[in-house]
Image (tube, rainbow, N blue to C red; front, side, top):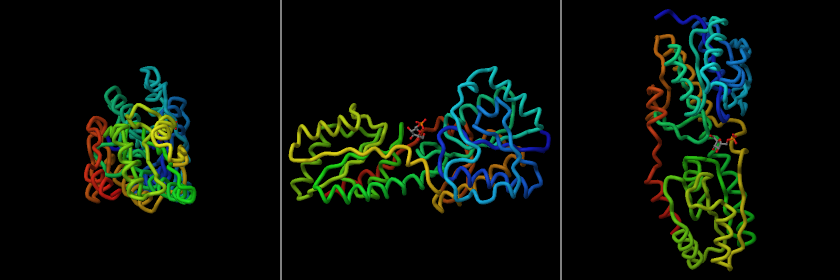
Length: 327
Ligand code: F6P
């Protein structure tokens, strides 16, 4: 395998706090090893359009603390086509780029695996999504920040819920995964937590709310993951409870995209810095098709295929803790 002479980096899929810190880390590690680094705008979309920018150690200054991504992000339809990927490859070659770091989620890694198969192009992945739903890392970039954002918001909702003796349904992000809901729910002391991985059932939810009412609780918070499988959306859930527990004044709050923004937590900044260094160093060692991640506070590498297919498992112990805490 030929020596890597130029590396490009992109952010792809839903943005996440810490992506900028990872871009900075990739650019600075390249500078450290005296390898030119290019940024690709708008993920695979910008790659197809040939939208590059030179990244130097200095040009990535003052971004470690910024939310969003300076390279912008997109979910690309063009990259799903063979012609799109061919154009992307030609653009990389025209720029003399011989390896790429993709910061994103499972959709972005799926694209990377296909691209590598077709063109044998070296790619390293850095997991960046607030959902934390990627195998091969205990934490994805942005997850810790999003958790703290959600907890802060739920704390505020609790203030008003308690003043008015109300029951609030708070929807948090997580299309397919309940990590944010479960952890923010336990962290904010929610009464019930509804996640896609475990369908509590409407009856049990009602029973639990009735139990807490009997136990003397005057207000409650139910945290619902966006992808919850109860069969009802958060407004329908609220209506259902209102109909069955008329003694409760019910309100709904959807936290939405605010969970994706904001300055990254220290944890996410440190994680981004560590993963960026490792991604570049692995590429320079001739490794490809790997995703870097965190396990037992060590940076490890997992094959990208495994990271996509491995699935994610929720911490059952935490569900149990949540049950006990609502006694
Ligand atoms: O994957 C991250 C995520 O924030 C999910 O939790 C959410 O369902 C989705 O992205 C929203 O995507 P979009 O910003 O395209 O609406």
